Length: 273
Image (cartoon, rainbow, N blue to C red):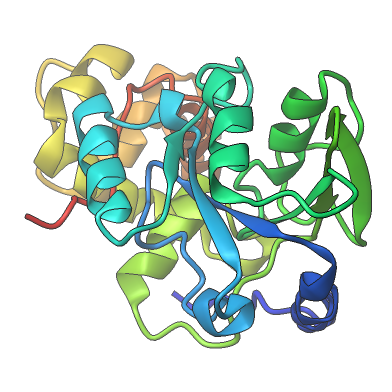
């Protein structure tokens, strides 16, 4: 998969994170609960240094619950507080203020300032809006909505700095790139939609064949993922003149339904034993 995903604003974001670290006492690192390993920027440790951190497994409503619990335990074993959240519904938010106050010592002003970081489309702005109880920052289903830094008062004595999503310049792991693309962390223009959908179909077919059968009312799954994609296209009425299936539109439908949780709750990164 060839993904050109590191536009100039991401380099500016890295600089912005470094420059503003001195203004905050804690960093919320948001990761996608469906891909806890693949959605962690490998540069983040060097960027944040020894700054206090809280890991947020966001979009937990879309991930496999036992896997999310396993990942939370594994990550917390490293000594960093971990919270499982669904920023859209607000499930899990009751624990956040307590975790902040347990993690951060208040300064002389009694105020706590934090920074929210993570890859694109991991739900940073939704997290802040849910915390603030209002639409304080713009959100969208596409990566790249946030472009500059924004301070938001989310609770009495707590302010958060929203930052644009930042990926990393080079990706050596092709499978991690496909997982990022499947979950929507990479802009559609940067990836081959059909290639991503075929990989996802192969993964679902191997791990959750029943989910595909139920969703698309298929008695049996074709051995070939290309034929499976066409079967989905037929089920969705994406057939043109001459009976030809529009594979691109079928791929778009599959990815959309996967990202919205219509196929089920899946964790693409298995938790290490």
